[in-house]
Length: 80
Image (cartoon, rainbow, N blue to C red; front, side, top):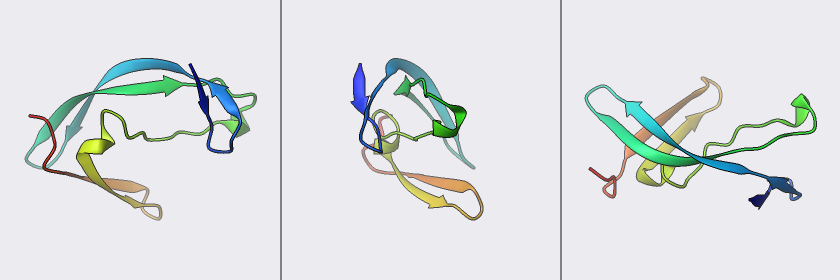
């Protein structure tokens, strides 16, 4: 599968499904998400992107770059 990267050029993506478990103070959620792996020319080109399909579409995400944290709040459409 080929996808367009953030900077524009096409990159080869190897898709796969993983089970994701998010654990909070009182609740936990287990979802199946689709992830993709890509090979980059150099380690300096590598990046990580937290995706939307199969995971973040069920949450409101608040990212704090200073503290290096993310807070996920489930939305009404979260599957049971």
